[in-house]
Length: 112
Image (cartoon, rainbow, N blue to C red; front, side):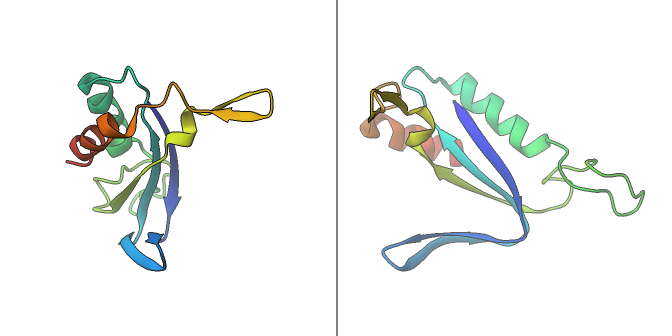
């Protein structure tokens, strides 16, 4: 499993011109699922994302001191199979990414 994590003031996902999900301050997480990922991998990523100290502590002035959970911020999780893409010559290959029929329920459990 791969994750690209970005602090955001706000973020949204739009599909066919319609916003399907949005958050205020928090983390935008693009997550790529590998065909061999397990529930243990999902638990690990969830713990890391929720507990990474990426935000300043305004009461002490320390930077990189509080997690998204401590700040009561939100997380927008976006499935991104292209994180497991690589080039075969000039053509992208996504064979190691989890196939859609397996990825959909796995992603849903990750969101939960």
